[in-house]
Amino acid sequence: MKCLALSLLLTVGFVAHAFADDQQKAESQINKMNGLAAYTTIRRFVNLSLADQLNVKRSALAQQRQELNLNYGSLFLFHQLLSHGAKMEDVTAQLKAGKNMLQIANDEHVDWKQVAAEGKKLNAKIEDSLYGYMIRDKADMAHETAEVYVPALDNTAADRDVRRKDTDTAQDIYDHWRELAEKRAGMQNTSLDHLTETNAAQGHDQIRMGSPGSPESGTPNPTGAKQ
Image 1 (cartoon, rainbow, N blue to C red):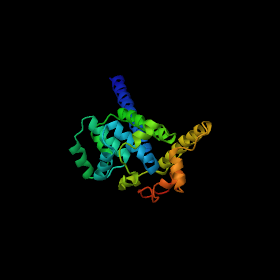
Image 2 (tube, helix red, strand yellow; image 1 turned 90 degrees about the vertical axis):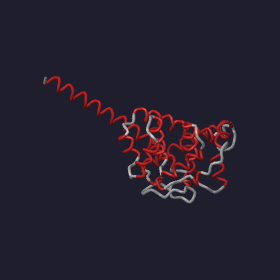
Image 3 (spheres, rainbow, N blue to C red; image 1 turned 90 degrees about the horizontal axis):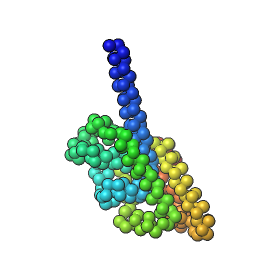
Image 4 (tube, one colour; image 1 turned 60 degrees about the vertical axis):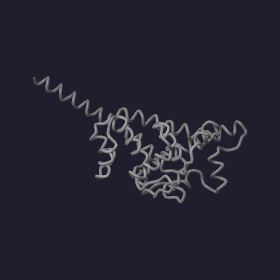
């Protein structure tokens, strides 16, 4: 009997650890989205990629964010809950009652492993879209501009809830793809990527002029965020 009890305790402990690990991985992807969306230069691609994933209009996501006061990570999780059977009115009621999306997701017993997997796919798509636009890929550029979208108007109070390390990570991601785009442009003896060229023409310093707290961002500056 003692062996059986010990075995059950070990099993329960293993399951709890695996569940916590899955949630941690999911939160990591969600925090990455929030860091990327903190910059207007990248937020347009966060919006575009999530709209593609959900097969909805870009403007609908911006409107929903404002109605529910959600950052993009929370909006992603909101739709993950809906896709797994949660009712929109129930989740919305809990938000209005003061709960955050992580609390609601745990109450709804969300599959964190699935959320982590979908979050990873979305973040990869965001980066792909960003790079495609940088190198002037015709399909990427046409897709991004197919619907009128103004990133500076797509902001909420919840957008200020972003950690410095997540905005730092976003900056590093942007710099990585920009460097690859510039190398490609140099090899092909062409001009800089479209985003770099546009910002330079306006006297902007790349992504930093669209950082949280800058006039272009529409997002209050989080404590300690890079400028």
